[in-house]
Figure 1: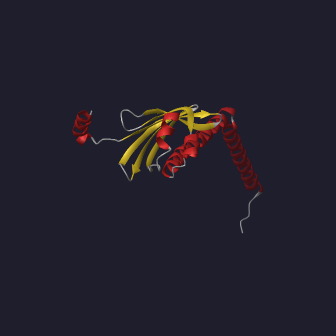
Figure 2 (figure 1 turned 90 degrees about the horizontal axis):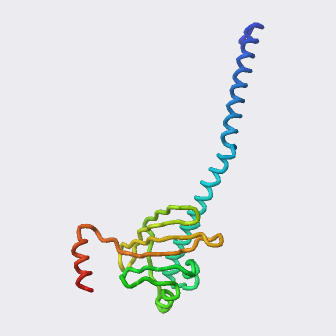
Length: 179
């Protein structure tokens, strides 16, 4: 058993009070940082960006899902009415009505996501994604989504085939000859 004299107890109490005061001041400063209006706004912006990017990614996931099941009503609902689809052929730059006429008679197409990047600028998200298709192998989708009436809609989608640099001249020569 430890026995303290009155002087030792007083100095221990004083040190304890000082520690508590420092601890309380630290908590107040930390609270002020966390709940400072600018910090709260920044936290909300980060959360909004994450939510927007998640919502945009879901739109692109649904795009691939609906195209593989040829669910054209749901597929085209993901686009803005003034949206554009740019296909792999140099002649394929279609507005939505034109692209629907091409798509609806088909049984769809399948592209599985390999990787995706999203960059948000306010109500606009730019994206690029690598896809894998049973028919064509590796392809790349790039485009733009615009927040429209609170929902992310595709304004432009461009599908292309990334050509490895080692065979680029051979492939572009074949393209020239095909024209």
